[in-house]
Length: 399
Image (spheres, rainbow, N blue to C red):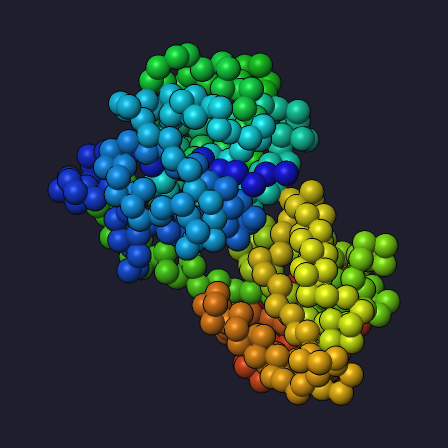
C-alpha cells in the first residue's frame, strides 16, 4: 500500500534570480506560506504520510522548516546530495530508504492528481513505473508523450508542437526500476523513462487537475493568486451508515460492513474530480458502550484501506460519540456535534477552509439535511439506489 513519497527539492532555482539567493525555491512564499507546505498538505490527505526530501542547495533551510514532520502530520527523512545529482541520481542515492513502491513529486511543481489512481497503473500493466500526464494545446516546449492502451511508447522531440500529452512530473515507481540508472548524476527523464518505454514497462495516465510550476518569476507571481484558490476546495459531506454502507445498526466491524451500491465509485469520482470526501457521522454505539472510540477509529482505517485498493480515499471522518439519553458516563450528554447539530460540519468547514457555496451534503435522514442546511450547505436525501448516480445528479442540480 502506497504511503511513501520522495519530494525532489535540491535544485538551485537559477531562473528566479535573486529570489533564491538565500531561500531555496520550494520554500518561496505563496499565499502567505512556503510553497512546499501545499505539496505536503496534498500528499498527506491521500494518506501518503512518510516523506523523503531529496535536498541539496540550501538544504539546511528546508530541514529547519520541516524538521521531522510532526507538526505537519507526517514523518520526514532527508537525503542530502553531496553535489547536484539530477532527478535520477537523487533517487538512486536514497535507494536503501525507499519502499518497494513509492511516489515521486517535484518540490517546485504542484499537479493535483489522484495519486492513488496513478498507483493502479503499476498493477494494471505490471509496469515498473507510471507517469501522470497533462493534456496541453501546444507540446512544442515540452515534447509529447505517445501512449497506446495505457503504456507509454516513446517521447517526441520538443520541436513538433501541437496538442497532446506531456509529462506532468508526478511518478509512481517500483524500487527495482532504479537498478537501470547509471551511477552518479543522471536524469529519470533522459536515463530511465525512454528505456522503460522501449521495454513496455512505463505506464501513463492523463489527468486534468490543477497544475502550476513556480520555476519562473511570472508563474511564481501567478501562484499567489491561484494556489489559495485551489486549496479552498469543494467538498461532499457524506453520512456513513445508510449512505456509504448498509445500515444494519451500530455497524463497527468488517463482518457487518456492506458497501452501498456505487459508494466506492462515488468516493473515487470525488477524488478524481478535485472534491474532498468527508464523512460526518453520529456514532451512538460508542455512547451506548457497544464499541470504543479506538475500535471505531481502527474500523475507519480499515474502510479507508479498502478504498485505497480501488484508488480512492476519504479525506477525513468526523464523528459524534454522544447520546442525550442512552449514553454511558461522560458520553451521556446533549451536544452540538450530534446531528441535527452542526458542530462537526462547522469543524470540517474551518479545518479544511471549505468552499461552502459549492459543497454538498448527502444523508439518509432528515437530521442529516438539517445539519447541513444550518451552515448553508446544500443537502440531499439519499433514499437507497446508487450513490454515484445520486451524487452526480446532485452536483448537476446545484452547480
